[in-house]
Picture (spheres, rainbow, N blue to C red):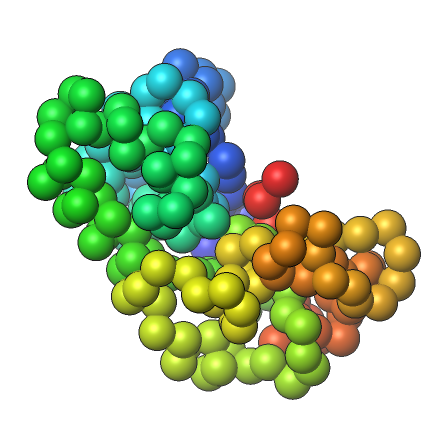
Length: 198
């Protein structure tokens, strides 16, 4: 829980942009007990400094385990890493063994966080079916690569749309959801949805 009068920063989609990450800390302050952060996935891929980004975030997590939180994004998976550069970057700078250790660690990251029993934070979005509860989310076997469908995939890949309702995603995985679905599908009606996937 975030104490009343305190702030909590949620960031997402760093995508290997190390200097942008440093700039976030310069502008907003470094993570610590008085300045908690949640990084909501996609720390790696696309940028040239994915390794530096994830190492810095993990270092802060070790230093301040109760002040820095990490969630899994769709780019914390082997398939995406092979396509968008993290695998090649780690193997060029170190070796395949280190890359495999990162993949194991990514599989253990939470798929969602709830802040102050009010804000539901997940990387992608909502679900293709009604009635999903926090217990359903807790029951997901996240220690694996994302499957082709199901709650895990929807939480990593789903996207909002400007019309009401739900529709198949144009990405081919996850689901598109309208504003009305946030009210209907978020596990409790007192929650607000915060997502970062783009």
